[in-house]
Length: 182
Image (cartoon, rainbow, N blue to C red; front, side, top):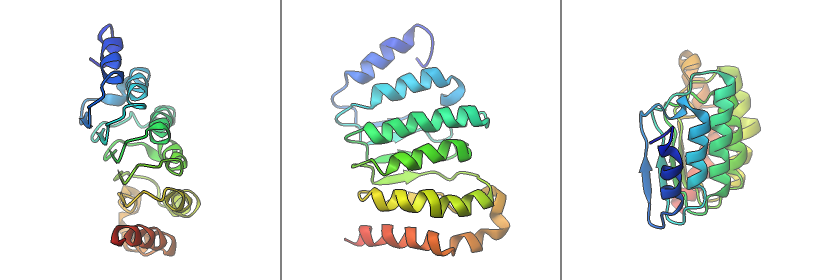
């Protein structure tokens, strides 16, 4: 379904769906073929009813090139979708290269309410990323209400308490909390 001669038919079926609301492709080695994955995501971009997409447990191979390709593909979906409300990317190993385009696109989303990551990233990147990329994206994406997984990076578990309490992450949490209360 995700490669070979069946891929165009699968993409056409997705592209022509007017009622698909939820698509969960969890643990199917989705990023093993980034070209096929990109075609499938492109087919989802214009769906009028797609509210939830889960690609959880589909790890990239960990290389920056594949991480970047996955992130750019997902960024296009976030920016172009007119209906996507929930995006679950837990345990995908997007790394710095993949998460950056996702958060850059987040500011252009007018529908995404929930983004789940749980991504292992380096502690220095995490600190800078939250203030330089995440905070501006959260401020710009006024529909976002829930963002999970930022303080769960495996490289700084020993420093977990410090990351959770950084002023910038606290600002992000406060912004999202205020939106949920309204």
